[in-house]
Image (cartoon, rainbow, N blue to C red):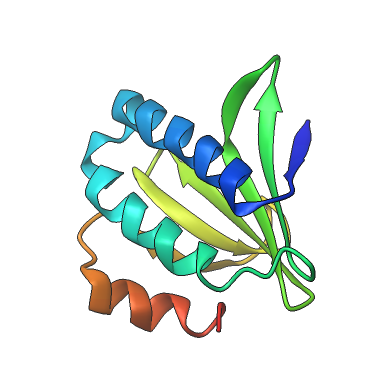
Length: 117
């Protein structure tokens, strides 16, 4: 079930859980995850935008929906390619960007600025 997050404080808390759990499947992504999160959250206006994180039986799953300026995106972990995908609208949407952990802050900026401004 998707759970709406209503503030930066609440979103920060849930992201910290994601960061800890990423060590289980994707420790190679941890350095990049913080930068990705900081970039996106800095562009979120909780009065206008929306963040939802998927939970199953109280456990985080691999999907976060972000609605920014009326456009819905999905961040999801791709187990096959060991990367985070940014998809259009749903988990079956077109892959807009993939993040494999090799991105530095400039690489993240060039990928994300097209979607989050």
